[in-house]
Length: 552
Figure 1 (cartoon, rainbow, N blue to C red):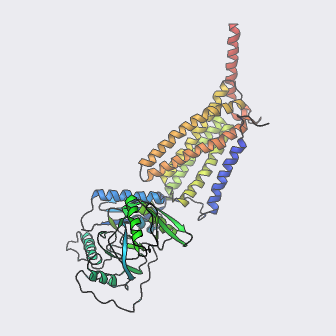
Figure 2: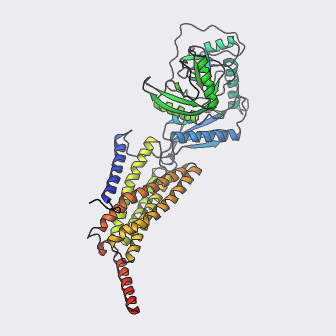
Figure 3: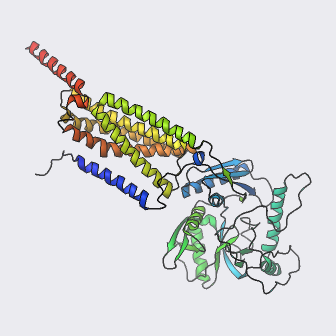
């Protein structure tokens, strides 16, 4: 006989939960780096700090609005990469980026200017030997030395930025004030005079003497309306490029992926309407010619146009990409270029502001609170308190696995604020149990048995539980959207535990209580702690019968 519509299958719910836990821990133990510990935030494990110094073409002081805009874009890049727990702070005319761990390359990549242009290639040649310097504007071109070897390429997609190195440093003022700003302006002006000259002789000399092994003083400050002599990112080639035809602001979307046919990582670009039309026209009229994608005055890729690209179609940037560098470039291009170019300082290690002692203190406080809650539940609810303890333990088991996986796959870092969110979330889970158990008591006070009170109490309690958790989740979501820094970590873990509360109550607590209601042993008042409630029900029934007899 088929089960009725109201049939309950608690074993199925418990099986679903067991499968979920098994899948989570299979991912923990058999995927990725197989680490079984969550990633910790800056306040608990320390991090790496990089200071970005703004460089303006005229040497003027950056405006507060441009610094705030740069801060917002970098924070958006941080969110796009999933680097949770990172900090981007304005410090005078600088931006200070701090990321968890000891990976300084990640902090540097977040501060990349990311000014992308598409420029037609006029000509190209092998890069000049290391140490060759370009002449100043107006100097007579010299012959390029022959028989020298091409410098080895840099083994990274984006050259390190070092503001201390410049081809022609400007003497420092006597008082030392404004030295770095003046030097940066002079470097940019000198580089523009040679590498963006419209004089063919100066262009050829710049190509012959441009040293691709040193940091680029022009990075991100080239004029898109002028020609450009630029190095490739691997330092092996020098290009003479025509004025830009497409600005990076015309990028609508950027994604990274692996081209299995070419066995390489690529970045796929989708242009906005105007950029897409320009690209379609260019490719149809320049088949067989090269088009260079320049990023911060470096040629990332210079593919040959094989055929016309229809308007609205995507195009790809190829180069010496790894999966990580392709993802970083796509993320950087997607969220836009910075309004300023920056020179990055050397990375410095930041010690933990709170440390493991604070972590242990927080965990001990949470454990003490949890034990007190469990003791109260055991004394007040007895058998139901045992089920509460089991549900909370299983909830903690699932939360731990999720924290490990989030740290592995989206770089989520757990800080002290996040731990506070987890503890509060587990307390809210206990509130859901209380709502359910009190509904059972209400049904029993009306004269129903424990067995019949459980399904009726659940039908009334689940609406209250869902409503309460919905309010909590909305509050956590709003807090996450509006907050910054570690408060977002608190909101994230609070929202996560709110969702898990619903999962645990529906897949664990309710099925366990339903099974207990059908057990003769667990239904005994002395075991389930509901004897006083049953006594009240008997007294009410007797009082009702007595009142009825008196009326007769």
